[in-house]
Structure formats: C-alpha cells, structure tokens
Length: 282
Image (cartoon, rainbow, N blue to C red; front, top):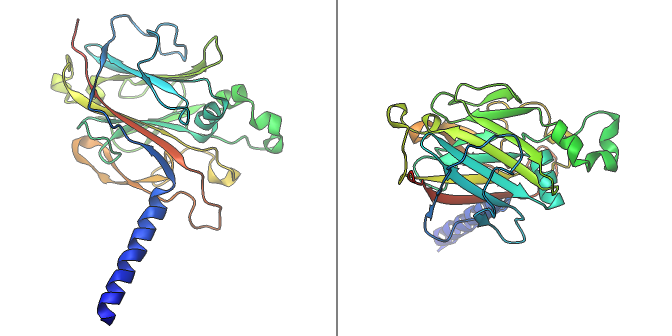
C-alpha cells in the first residue's frame, strides 16, 4: 500500500511540473485542417510596407491575439506578412521579439523547424531606460531593431546573427515597418532552396508546410535581454536549442521562461501555428 501511495504522489508531482512548464506560453493551436495557400502573382518588395499585398489578409485571430497575417508563394519563394494595429502587440514584437518558424514536414511544432528571429527584442540601455515615454515610443524601438538571426535552414543550420540589411547565405529577406495607417507590418521572403531539397526547390505547389509565429512578452528585467542571441540563449519565449531534428532544422525544447536565477517569472509568449498547402501556378 505504501508503494502505491509513493507512485501516485510522484505522478502527481510530474503532472504539476509539466503544467508549470507549459504555462509560460499562450498556445493558439490550429483546429481546422490545412489551409490552401495563395499564389503570389505580383512582385513583392520586402520593405515593411504592405501596399503591394492583396487586402484583406487571409488569416486573422481573435481579439486576444490582435494580429492578422498572410502566407503566399510563387514558383521560387514563400512570402509571409504579419500585421497588427494593437499598440501592446506592436511593443511586444518590437521590444520582446518575434520568431517566425517554418516546419517543412508540415508538423506544427518547433522541433525540426527553421526560423527567423526579427526583431530580436531589445530594451533601451543607459539613462533613458527608466523613462516611460522613451520605453513606449515604438518608432525608437523600431530603430533599435538592428540585427536578426537565422537557424535551421539548409545552409544556415546553427544560429547565425546578422546586422539588419546585411545579406545572408540563404537569400532570406526580412523587414519591419509601419504603414500609412500606423499598423506594424512584418514581411519576409524565404527561397524554397532554404527550406527544401535544392535540386527540386521550384514549383512546390501542392506541398504542405507549417508556419508558426512566436511573439515574446516585453522583458521587465533589463538584464533578461540585450545583445545578440547566441547558441544556448533563450529565443522566442524561452525555448532553447537541442539536437538537430530531421530535415536540418534545429530541435527546440520548451523551457520554463523565468524560473530560477532569482528573477520573476516571465509573462507568457504567444504561439500560433498553421499548416499551409502551397499554391500552384495560375
């Protein structure tokens, strides 16, 4: 009888730990089947302006998430646009950070996915950090987004950091800006050669992949962020780098945010996934 009691207690403790570990993320799981992608007929300029995109954006989430997005493709590239008019969401993206993930196996999970981290998240340093009007200025936060990171792609497998505007080996483009209506606009163009087998990385219409968004909360402790991320440093809401997954992506294990180190527990990150069936040429 004593042994049975110990077994139940251990299981209960394990369940409690898992619930605590998962509580640091707001998971918005896709409930519907895979969505058909849209064919990108006109040329897009990746400049943080959405005037060359077709409106309205196809995918929108509830009032809690407060952003909409679109995923399109042509014969050679995948394009992603995220847009938000919510001030808090804009600040979270600019000062907390945004990670956009691509799982070429059409699995809506971080393990084995490739990713773009931009903005990487920043807190103003120096004497101005404590001034609320400075911290809340989204245009200053945008100007501070001067670097981006890539990981898990065909050439860029481990985490690599780049100055914003500097070309990378994969030919990936990324930009963030504000449109005429004051909405934050995130754009990226990812060549199929970065995601799929280079010998057949054209005309991928009909193939499925999953696209994920991780929006980090604004760190409350200036020491919690700052400087460029490197291997082993938390990226996208406290998930660290594990072993390589299939397809060249980096295996990612969910962490527990701000446990330990005497710091307060970090607010929750937002995670949104959607499986996309790439569009065929029209």
